[in-house]
Length: 271
Image (cartoon, rainbow, N blue to C red; front, side, top):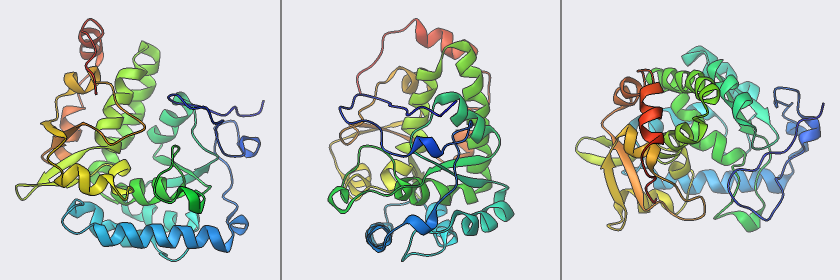
């Protein structure tokens, strides 16, 4: 049975990606030979822009690990990244054709395999893209997988996701992912820094999230996070801040079943 495309949120455009290439677990082979010179140039320009913005805005762990991605001037071979990543934390990246369903996604994470979309945006989408592409997934997410504490947290998140699916609580847990792994902030040396992949791979939201006086920046509170809706088509009006990745690991270690039950009985909060 062929893998079916996945849509999260509202969109009039059908999902991008060749899902006919996907295996039953939604992984596929990275056809590196199929990338064009324009594809590699888009990646190079995106990388150069983001790397130049990182000092003073990105967390120290991300900046230290970024060189482990390897090539800056082309889309890396995933096998090359995996050689270094397996040695560091036992993780590996696997190619997927695009967004994948919850259970395959959680299963991959639980087995220390991070799904990376293998196509790249067009030059016309340079500043903004609705769906995650190879640059967002690889540049935004993978460097922190070289950090042992974060790497262990993400595996536990995958295990917790499978449990949340059985309990009918995936929407609540997805908000935790959104506000920490995608759009989280971290306090370092009494200053705010970005740690979420959606921020670190964004040309505009990186500075907005750290420096703008407009958004609210709140200490991480799991109950509030799970009650709070989020926006997929604009900068976040609210961010949650951790004091370190150990805090994130410790706060998400307990059994979430009592928390899910409590949150389900409370009203949702706007983004």
